[in-house]
Length: 266
Image 1 (cartoon, rainbow, N blue to C red):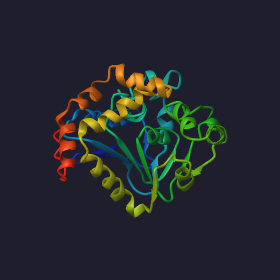
Image 2: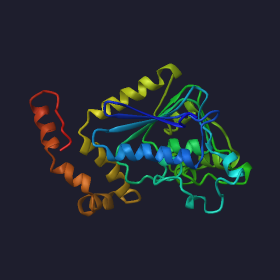
Image 3: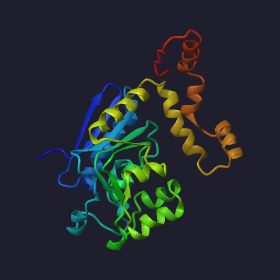
């Protein structure tokens, strides 16, 4: 039996590939495997960035494995009490202490929980043929593993409601126009584009890189004035470490000396 989640390393990049034919649906075991991969990214100091993609070109993920639900392998009521792993559904949707960025290299259509997994990422690159949809409402459900929480914060409210209520599909091109996706590329360029971004991020000072997500989480919901106060007074250990780091000094010195910085993660 093949592994549903394949994990490889390239330098400071962790590549996670969802490979569960035919539609890359995510059951509890697969979710735990994804969670293990993202926790490895979180905890390994030799890794700076992750990429999540799906096998093949047809589908990124169809989301929650409804067959497993129908067969009693999962529950609907208080579904979050089942063991999907520390990162919540798909291993990433609730992994709040992952400060390293994750790039979604979206290789095929994105449905339901697959969309929720993609929205939990920090940068989204989609192949030209990709579409996004939330088909839960006709099934008597709502997309409460991330879409209800995130989508209307990223799209205009009425556009998000089209997807929530009407199940309208959104093309990759429209998703990019609305800012939901960062970039749309031909399918043959998808992984090279994702790796180029990941390699660029891998060359950034690691502590500064991780400070970005720590800070954004801390100030979410703040007014601008409150955000300044939060950054100056809240318990933000990675940000504080960055301010005192050798890497910060190295970056300034390298700029003045017109050379490439040699960051050590210290």
